[in-house]
Amino acid sequence: MKLSLSLMVFLGVFIFNGCGQGQKEESAANEPLALATKAKSIRPSGAVKAPDFTLATVEGDWVTLKSLRGKVVLLNFWGTWCPPCRKEIPDFVKLYDKYNEDGLEIVGITLTSGSPSDIKKFMEEYNMNYIVLTDIKGNETQMVTQSYGKATGRPINGIPTTFIIDREGYIVKSYIGPRTEEVFYNDLKPYLYP
Picture: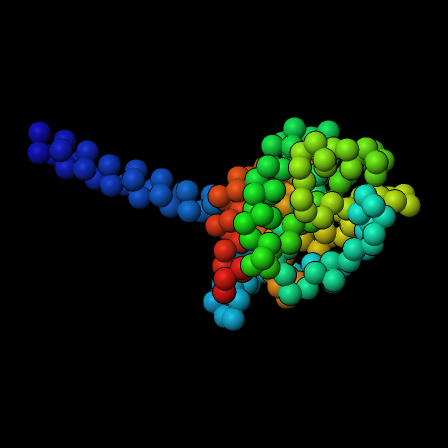
């Protein structure tokens, strides 16, 4: 009986520690960039400079990433036809309302979502209050998608795909698939309030 109890305790400790280790390793493997140091701003050791781009709003105004330097940018590749993308929009609207004054800028880059006028109607329907960029001349968004895939070493094969870009223009976090306002805020907080 004493041996069985000891064995059960040992197995319990082993399983508990083993699962915890596995979860840490799994979440670390899912993290595209591991945190390394805390300096003036927290930046992962593998952070890469975000490629600059020039894209147009649905009104035809040109926006560059460089023009947003000094802000924390939540850059989201999405499409109007994508249900998981649609699911994130209300959370982006809330984040923008709450943290834009603190330096947050949200930029949505639409992929194969129709004409600027169709996208504008969609934006109105979803009360989108942040910058939305699209193709005006042809396949500009495809080139931006490719440049982000090349910079991070992971092609953008699915949407939504989202990047956090710090105030100095480095990609510090990325996500494939939808996330909630809470998840985004927790990851944005160190860059909004260093």
